Image (spheres, rainbow, N blue to C red):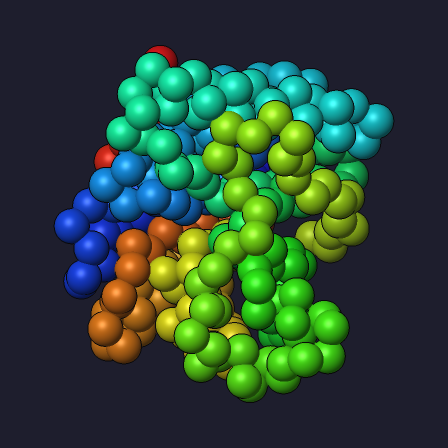
Length: 254
């Protein structure tokens, strides 16, 4: 199985730089949202995306994908730690990561932080990832409702990210897929602004097209675009479409 993708990465209206990065490949798609602002969020997101890009030609199977992903993210964490050691001004930088990787007949979801993965099937949008945030923990504990979470003052507080800590590992899960499934990976510059009903409406009307991507961006802009916006729309195909690219100002394969 291979991915056919369209994608976009945009600075938004209120940010001076784009700290997001993304990869669209045949086997791997991913988004990463850098943390740390001027402390180097764009550096951290580029590091993990570059590591995934270099793994594009590896053979991922249902048996091997877990260990390969742990190896990739451990190397990314090590590189982030080295960058911080070499340049103390980068202390505090980190990144989220949400990715899908194809195996024989399933896709592996890799997730850490609050960037999201959605599955759009039969006109219904389902969030596959689970935010690693304080408000999500409060929701899980029954101390906060989903409605209350949207306006919580600490709704953006992340509890897990790649920040150079060797003990931090991503959530990894194999996902069943069907032929017409559409997947959306996005940073919180989109998911914290648009509701699922609005996203669903656009995907229902336009599917896997550049029009859908531009409509999602326009909807975020209409609501103020307070953060960087990065999204990848993808579906699976039996043909290798050779769609390969990197998005994000800092994401360049070495």
